Image 1 (cartoon, one colour):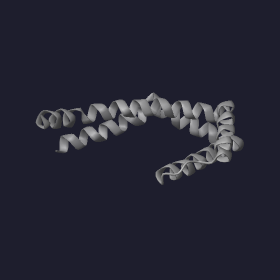
Image 2 (cartoon, helix red, strand yellow):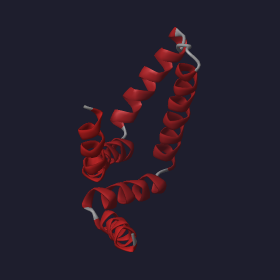
Image 3 (cartoon, helix red, strand yellow):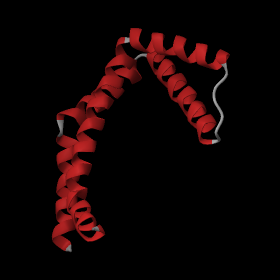
Length: 116
């Protein structure tokens, strides 16, 4: 069991050194240097969370909220710092999904084998 935890700690260190992780870290640092970009990103996260809460309760945003969100998305794409952060986060997300698939592969194989 100790070997498994050692590998998990090794994976953590490797993640911190990964180019996609460091790209997100750098993008956050750049975002932090620009107040306008930082506020725009915070507004995006806040709006996104509001939408998620609505959807989790089975509701949908009204037309006004949708129009506001679309306007916000246009601003996000136009802002170099926010756009860079979002792209870096997407690349890191892909990396994390690939790692997750690899980690869970033995469990998936085990359960699939005995479900038949």
